[in-house]
Length: 109
Image (cartoon, rainbow, N blue to C red; front, top):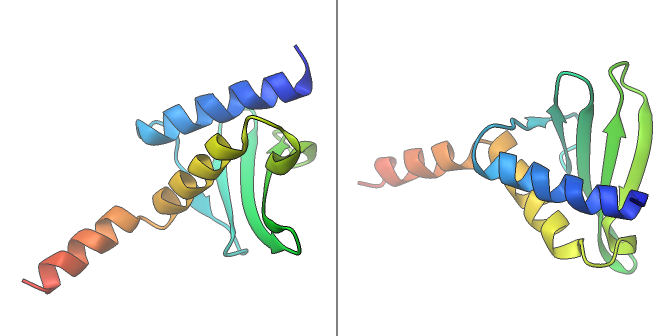
């Protein structure tokens, strides 16, 4: 299995666990970056706006916080759509957007 295959599988699993609520994402000091810690490693996902459009980057950190692998979703053909979905799901989870929307709706009643 190549690293691209591993990242494609990883993105799929992260997205599934984010959607079912079993993976928690947190804010970082960077407004466009979110962190999902796990017992043995962590995942950072970030979005940047560059000259060629939106760039998504996923970093894998070991248990000491060192970056051990990095993937640019734009370079991983076939994963761009899922990576974008993962970023949006991570952002909504970290920012607790459902709670904010519910509170807004209640305040407007």
